[in-house]
Length: 336
Image (cartoon, rainbow, N blue to C red; front, top):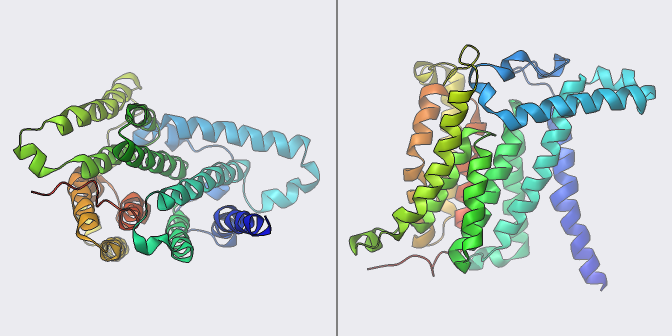
């Protein structure tokens, strides 16, 4: 009984309290030179224009959280209002609370994924905690570019990864239908919803089955592609074209000339290589290779219209590498 309580307490401290403290240090312990979110009284206008306007869910949550913080500061925290305002605006504090909520969800989901059918090495609880801690550090350190959509998008992605693993192992269709709905909904958060398709394809696709003319993979991946494309294109048709654009700009030249962008690129490559080296068996390595292959459209778009210095763009791939390395795929990989 006492041991069970001790394990639950350790889990709570490790999965909830530690990320909260690290996240608070990231948002309030030092200031990023990358963004001026901390001085914005309300959600900035650019969030509702250009390419950011398609991120409907996080933008609306930003408005609600700003209103919530203004209400709390005026009605329940009036004694601390001056102190609170010294450390950020209602928008910035609302952004912190919103992202903190989804960070904790990410920590919980990551913990569930790492425990779900792990390889023999990861069966050790201390190894699980070290991997979990490493991934949480990766998530939090990328917040030097605060965003109102990253934590929500990551939560949707990790939930999709868990649904994929549960579907592949259990063959229960409810997990697949849940994944389809999740991809459609998360497209209103951020375009990284497409990476759930890449992960599903990496685990489900088998070249030997395709050679045997087994087209099950194709029929399974089509609903996921439609679940992403229909909302994605629908948003771009419905929203005001005078205030929106498909992309903010083309940065391919800056990505390979700026020392900051090159540093972000090298960091991401090394991190991905490290995750690949964590894969201790051929099955895991094959899944990770397939995942990177199916993620090529996403990587191409990062190169073209993203900035390598924003390492958060590579974060789902880095986390996936650790997840693949931690998971046992031996019974899923069909060999000739």
